[in-house]
Image (spheres, rainbow, N blue to C red):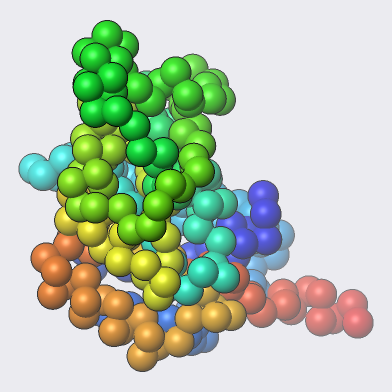
Length: 238
C-alpha cells in the first residue's frame, strides 16, 4: 500500500456531525492507536477504507449511492491512489460491477457514432481494463480543447452509470478547476480528499461552503498524508 493510502483517515460523512478538518489534531482515536502493541498502519488504512465503502456505498439507506466523485482541494494531493483503493475495497464487498475512473478528460467525438456504439454494447467497457471479475479501470484520455461543458460531463457520467453498477470517479482539484463541482451535481455525491501536509482549514472550509452553495451532495472528507505518533514500544528501544 502506498504512503498516501497508508496514512488515510476517514474524518466524517454526511451521517456525522462536525465540519471539514483540514489540519489533523491529536485525538484518542488517532494518537491512541499508535500506542497499541502490534498496531499496523497499513491495516488501519484498510479498515478506514472499508468503513468508508460500507458507510457511503453499502449503508442500505433509502437514497442509494452508486457514483461518487473524489476530489482534492489542491493538485498536490494524491486522489488517484485513494480512488484505486476505494474501488478495490468496494469490488471485494459486492459482486456488482465497479469502475474506477481516471480524471475526466474525454476526447470529443461524433455524437451519432457515440449513440450508436452505446446502443450496441456501450462506449466505455471496450476501453476499460478489467482488473478482476467485477472491477474495471477506466483510463484518462487526452483532452481536446479547454473546459468541458456541463452537458458533456453529464453525458459521460450517465454512460458510466449505464455500463457499471458502481463508479468511483477521480475529479480534478477544486482549486484549479470547477469540473469536480459540476460533476458532483450530476453524481450521487462528492468526497473531499484533504492532505495533512498541504491542505489548510480556511481553504477546505471555503470549498465546503462552495459545494453546499452549488447544492452538491458533500458526503464526507478523507484525510491523507497523516503522520501518526511513534509507538511507545519503539521509544523504549531507542
